[in-house]
Each structure stands twice: as structure tokens, then as C-alpha cells.
Image (cartoon, rainbow over all chains, first blue to last red; front, side, top):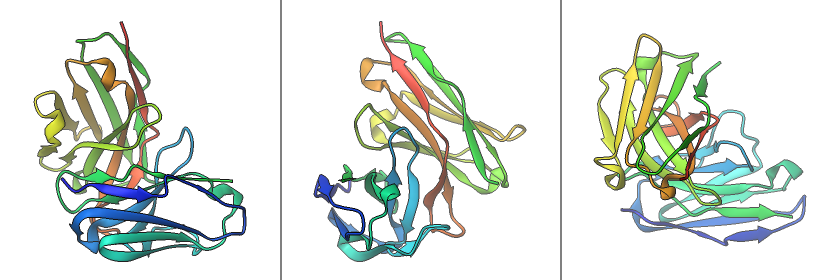
Length: 107
Length: 121
């Protein structure tokens, strides 16, 4: 199975700052089938980015995704208070579908 | 609007089975696949499998083969996930999530709120 390793495990930032989250795959992943989710405590995950770089409906443009093959990045350009959450990367092109272990973005 | 409404929390004893439901609305049920994903307390997300609304075809993660069964009832736009031979390791929140093949290229675009399953003697 494709193992997704996210770093850092926890990212401490201040509102207004830029956050860069990384996800490394154990083998090449099709960009078409790679995404990012945001999860707040007690809530279901929310799709942020699909196909590595496309924003899902209603997602603000401060969120952007990039990368290919084994290295992918989620960037939050200017953190808003509501962005403090856990972020998961995800590949859905090869079975079994897998998720990274998550990056917690905290103040 | 598109919505997935899951059944309520369950408490089960070790060795028992649980069946969780997920009722879809706001879209054509048979045009989409539905995934099941679980999350143990304080842990990450774990994919369990999917079911196709039209045919009822399924694909399960190897870890759950032989213990999980996903079914659907097209008359009431509902999918079910049954997990047998429960242990404490199955204590988790279970989510259903729609697979979108039309706009997001197979991403899980809509999620249910989750069903908490607690396994305890």
C-alpha cells in the first residue's frame, strides 16, 4: 500500500502567518487522485484540495496545493482563526486508499 | 443540498456485530459510490471500503475482508456498513463519504457527521 507521511506533526503559527504542510508518498502517486482534507475537533473531514492543486467548492483562495509524484504541499497563505485544525493528505488512485497521519496546525 | 445522515451512536460488547446506516439526499443515489472511513479516538483516518449505488458492487480494504459487509437499499437511498466480531480496537467514529466522479475526480466530497461505535464489555 502507498504510505503517506506528513510533516511536521504539529505546526505552531500565528494568525496572518503562512503555513506550509508537506506530504511524502512511499511511491509515485497520480496527481489526479491526490487531495487534502481539513478536520476540526468533533467534525467530519472537509475536502479542501483535489487533483493535487484544485480547490473544492467554497474553499478560500488562501488554500493552495502543489506537487507531484511523491512530494506534495498544502500552503495556507494567511492563517485565519478558523484554519486551526488537523490537515490530512490522501491518495485515492490506488487501492487501498490511504491517508497521511495528519498535521495539526495550532496557535 | 447534498446530505448524508448517519445513524446514532452504538455500544456493543466484544464479539458482537454493528450495522451503521447512511441515508443520502439531494443527489441521484445510484450515480455515486459511497466510501466508509473510520477514525479511532485521537487517531487518523482509515479507509474501510466502498459500495457502488447502482450495482451494489463493493471493494473492501484487506484489513477488513471477512468482517465487513457493505450493502445498499436504493428504495430509500441508504447504504449500510456491518462490522462483525467486534473488539475494543474497533471503537471509533465511522464516517460515510460520497465519492465524486464528476467534479473532483473521485475525491470524497461530502461526508456524514459520523457514528460513534464503542466496543466495551
